[in-house]
Image (cartoon, rainbow, N blue to C red; front, side, top):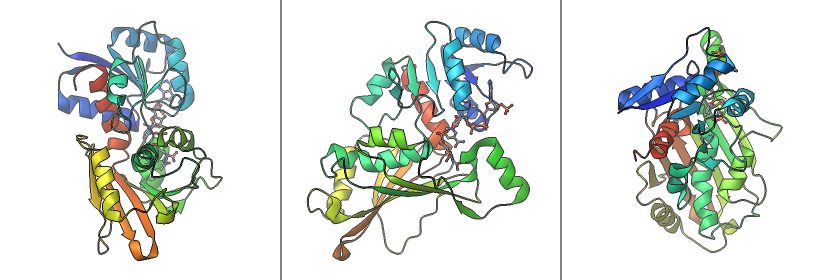
Length: 301
Ligand SMILES: NC(=O)C1=CN([C@@H]2O[C@H](COP(=O)(O)OP(=O)(O)OC[C@H]3O[C@@H](n4cnc5c(N)ncnc54)[C@H](OP(=O)(O)O)[C@@H]3O)[C@@H](O)[C@H]2O)C=CC1
Ligand SMILES: CC(=O)N[C@@H](CCC(=O)OP(=O)(O)O)C(=O)O
């Protein structure tokens, strides 16, 4: 029998992406609401009761409201930022932490990670877990995203007005992904995080520049590659590669997939490295990860 999924916010960017992926995968049927009822709390609560699993693809306030009206026993996966560091919610990044896939499978409340957070945690968690990076280290993160990361409003802006070509933002240094990055990367204090957005729809790069002396012991780039490869051994969605000087990295290369690539680039004589995660912000950064979590929660993976 097919599993019944209610996507609250199905008309939005993430909701549409999840619906398409579930349709392609097969074995799911969607509980849907008419245009006139899709924001009606009573209709949404009924749809949650009918479904085996509800996925929230809503702005944060609407996601909190959805949880408050959810019928008893409803299982919820929240794609918003609202519950990522909230007690009682399991963080939906199965590959990042030992035992996390099992915790997701058993949970009734799972939060889907943020797109930048997925890249940052994929890079930093192995280093803190292996004791190579002390939690109190001062870390910086730079990232670039396609404009679909900003949802319907940013998509409309870019597609109607043609730009800007590139811009930095969140320069108040309080980006909404910092709390989840701190908690799940295992850091003791927030990194300096400077995201940016370019005039391309989809795809992202998340970069952590590192002086090798910041690590707790002397390691070569080859050792780092090996350490990441061991950490993610068996993770089908994550590939580890040694960065090559002559390569440029295109943020769009993994679009349409649920994959994440880690590149370790280093200038060892200078004691410098840059760790880079490449992913599709709408794939492993949103809808792809959501479908992975749906499968785990329903015991299909
Ligand atoms: N875009 C991305 O890359 C990612 C987004 N997310 C998160 O997913 C969530 C959705 O984002 P995104 O898909 O980009 O946003 P969009 O703006 O594209 O879609 C949000 C949808 O929610 C609907 N909505 C708003 N309020 C309510 C309500 N009270 N009841 C029912 N529906 C409502 C909107 O309706 P209407 O169509 O009328 O506006 C819209 O269809 C956000 O929390 C976002 O932070 C997570 C990971 C990545
Ligand atoms: C380009 C852009 O604006 N990106 C969004 C993040 C998108 C995302 O993944 O955020 P959530 O998962 O937390 O919703 C931002 O920086 O706010």
